[in-house]
Length: 250
Image 1: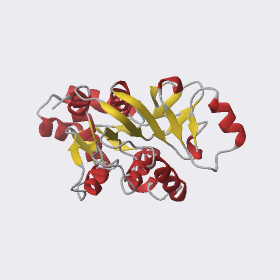
Image 2: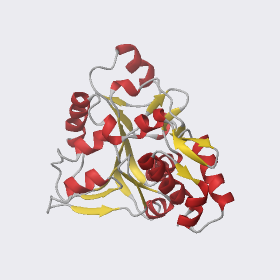
Image 3: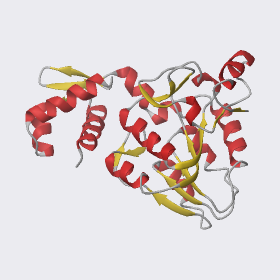
Image 4: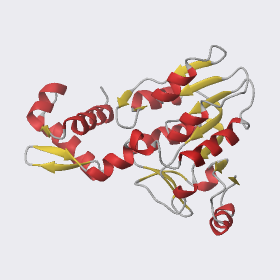
């Protein structure tokens, strides 16, 4: 198991149980207690946990920000508008990447393009596409993060780096003129960056609430993506502000 994947597995355990003990984790993963302490310190630095005497507990704000189910109902109408728009942008007989986000999950329900090969790290997208006998589905391997319902880690990144995508459709937690695209975890940021590097076109599906927000980990500059697809509720001022730095599609 890669170090990053062990940390994500530890995070799953902390979020499921509410607390962990260093000694027990060291036995579970067959590593030293000092290694577990470094893992917990890294997770604390990332904002996911708080260290305690002999262990760690989850930070509530990180649970909400990283919890797929908690975000699923937020701005659902706006995300559906975005998904329907994006579905018409997908080209027949292409290889596309659908990342893990509530918007891409909705998008997977509206796909009409023919002859697609779909690569994903999303359990929910994979479940929807698996019912489509006309599509070729590739599910990335790696470490499954329960709360985010995503597969991440170096195994996933290594696979992404061996592929090419005609179009990639991703989600983000923040969009800022200066900081660019950002997300809540370093693993997600790295996998999104790898996808971006190996895609001819990169689209971010983001409702208007994501603008002028910065999350913890930078993915890319706005100039490095093809476009941001958003909903009509975006203000004229915000659209004009971001239009100077990247293509905004409504």
